[in-house]
Length: 142
Image (cartoon, rainbow, N blue to C red; front, side):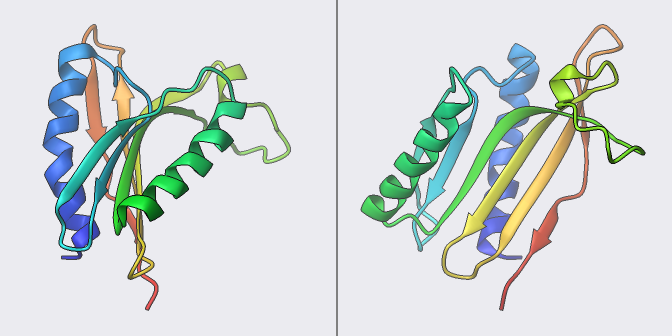
């Protein structure tokens, strides 16, 4: 198991506990950062007020990663998504009645080039929130 996969395994129970307690991730997105020795350096919260904030936060996080010598990260956020048969439909998921909600975890290891993405679908239909686990997608670059 890679360091990034171990990091994911470590934070998932924490995320699920917090999610089930609140029914959402309170501060969205949340970043978990580690150094090369797999020592957790910090957890950052970077809420967005508007879409343009995302680029500003990305630049700030890159600077922080360099300054703190961050080797790998996981970013956690809630997201809407849709499944489309008609690929010419360019509506945003937020504009679609059939949109679904998910907790999304993405990450990258600076030294190995490995990336990871994991979705946990959010089901609110039964009167209580349930996370439906999906297998992670990984891409290791050698």
